[in-house]
Each structure stands twice: as structure tokens, then as C-alpha cells.
Length: 110
Length: 119
Image 1 (cartoon, chains in turn brown, red):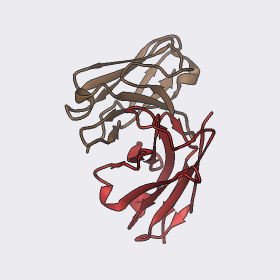
Image 2 (cartoon, each protein chain N blue to C red):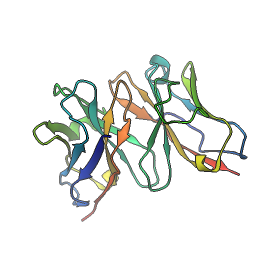
Image 3 (cartoon, chains in turn brown, blue):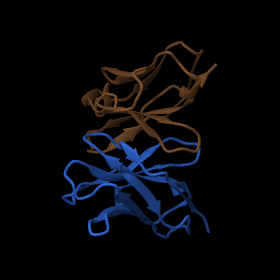
Image 4 (cartoon, each protein chain N blue to C red):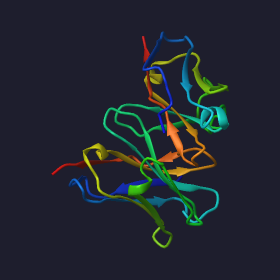
């Protein structure tokens, strides 16, 4: 089961919006509306940011939003802030009744 | 608020068995609302799903690891455990125990524990 494909890095200036893509197949992203997103700061455990493609758990800023089209899911961060600088991972439920993660994207705030 | 804490050896020899336990506090693992699982991350690399266990005892595994992994739970201790057999250096990673809800790999995570495989 191959990892979902994410860009290695994305950058933006404070206040700007950035979008991270996450591409899979019909057996994962395209087949289920069960895409999640995680934020991970260095040396820390991942933080749950988005589930079911576009739903934010309690406590997550509304600057984070998710969407999906076909086999590609996306995470958009609007009003970019210094604290958003981190690694981001997508994940999807799969046809094997398992989960697959993305390759990870390093977000840099310029 | 629920908390998860991993425990186990930080060093395992090649070909031996990696054994980790996750102790859950602030909530019971014997609930139908949540599942429990393990995820790992080799240093500097991406996350990898390992396994899930439901309160019913049903288990699900990453197909690529299924032949070497067992997940189990002890409701009397509010703990669940991971065993990974015949380890190699490629199994060196931070291992996280997680609470799972719905079809997400983890909403609450333990702090993670580094397990190194080396002779």
C-alpha cells in the first residue's frame, strides 16, 4: 500500500493562504470521505486537525479547511501565521480496512 | 481529558520481538465509542499505520505488517498492547498509541516512544 502523495514543501508569507494537496487512488482517497489531516511540530506528536474531509475537531482554528475532488484531497490554511510552520500529513481510510498516510509536507512561513 | 502513555523497552535486538503497552487514563477503553491503535514514525520520515483494536476484540492491521504484528487489550488494566515480531533496523521508529474515532487513524495521541533496533 503506497503512501499518499503530498508536496515536500509549501511556503507562504504571514496572512497569505496556502493549499496542500494529497493524492491517492480509488482504493483510498477517492473511495471514501474519510480523509484526515494532522499537524506535527518538531519533536511533538501529531495533532488532529481535520476529519471526514472537511470537519474541524473542537479547538481547531477555522483558518484550517479541507476539501476533496476525486482522488485528491486538499488542506487550506488561510491567514497564515508563524505558529502554522510545521509538518502536515494527510491520511485516508482504505479498502483494506486500514489507513494510509501521506508523504508529509513541510510548511514554511516566510 | 483522555491521556495515553506508551511504555516498553527503548532498545530491541534484531530478530527479537518488540513489545509496547499503552496505558489509558481519563476514560475507559471498554467503550463502543472509540477504538485503539498504534502508529509509528521512523525518525525524519512519514507516519505509518500499524493496527487497530475494537472493544469487541476485533482487530485490523496494515497489510504490509500483518504477518508480524499482534494488537491486544486488557480491559481490567485499561491498557492495550503491541507486539511486532522478527524486528529489523527498519522497525526503528517512534511508536505512538492512539485513540481512534469513526474512520480516523487517531484523534488523541500518546507522546510517543522511540524504539531502536540494534545489536
